[in-house]
Image 1 (tube, rainbow, N blue to C red):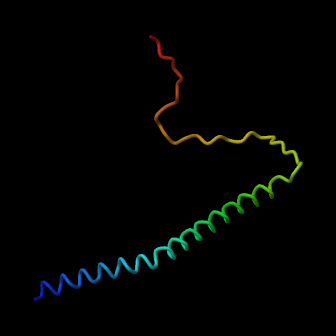
Image 2 (cartoon, rainbow, N blue to C red):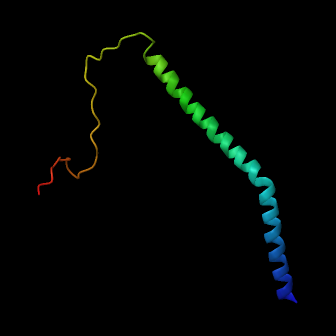
Image 3 (cartoon, one colour):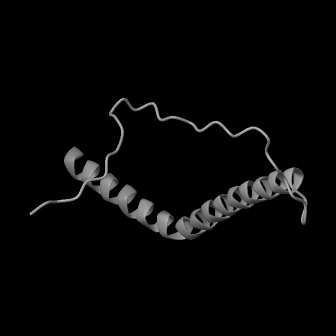
Length: 86
């Protein structure tokens, strides 16, 4: 009798979970999409503010000191172009 009771409860929980997942999945997906959209908008606004703060429209900027290029931390070596010879 205990085995049948256990199987019954497992099936009951399984079908209840499937039913509730179908009810709440669209709501959860909508909330996740809204959250991702808000984060993307915030990043876009931050980039636009940063660009608008540095250079105004029509303004010319001349850097007197060259910018330092970031060197990669890889110790693999440098890339060499080659041609295949037949």
